[in-house]
Length: 405
Image (tube, rainbow, N blue to C red; front, side):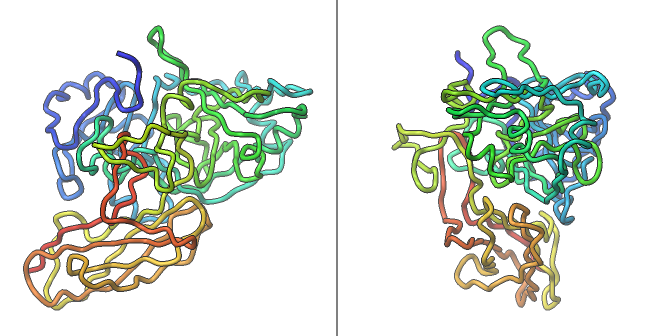
């Protein structure tokens, strides 16, 4: 069986109790288990604490995949200790020694570089902005029909302030030669099984030199956590996190198109406006995933929270896209029959998520279906149904059932 982006060893279904993982905590050095908060998850999930992390939902432990509970999304910036974790290959087992670590920039350049983190901090102009990091498969566990793969809820994302140096400045310092086409990025994670391809991603030269792609050495004003890519991470704002290479160690400029596995065989979407298809009509022409789709979710009320009839309640959520900007968020409290425009909080930047709020006073007791949809400045909006074979780019109108008493 060949390696595929829809399969991974140790996958755990969101719809399946995780009794088989009862002994996992004992096998994880420095990890402690905690009972899950059932108000935040629709099924039984193991909750673990990895070193440097708060208790997060465990999807797999080798390599680690940890999901952020929705309660942390009530903050504009996701705490480093609660930021989700997604590795394709085993991450470094210990933090690299910064005295020895070097970022190499080479390939189709005239002046190859070998830079320490301190040199990145002192020899290049720093840049800082808030940007959403979101796994391509965020919310995959909610797709219908269900898709194989890591069954993420809405917690495979996080919003942070990233600080580092422009990739463009590094490439300029290395003096790219004429004819350069692609730029590849590789980290310190390495395959452990023969035949497993190394995790290498690429950007075309124009994207790599757009002045927005960053090599980050800080996350929310602190060094990156080891599990989120210490000491350096590529930040490709507005694009899905598959390009945000962790523990970045090698940047190579190519004079030909890169045809590595993780660009040509994995992380592909149908080549159409929404990247969608149907189970009975798969699209043959597929391209690498890139820009984030427009999407919005609820962060309040909590799942299972009861509301009081006749009492105003502050509904709240988040909306996001690939950088065009959120124009409007609409909320329905009657299952989609009528829609109200929510109030948007001030923008934290074009690549940040945008918080929305709407007060609702339920008039009747019983179950109510809340729905939310966002529209960006390009007119792109969420749709009633959406599917592709990989469970990427979820962009359906989200709903939440609440009980009013």
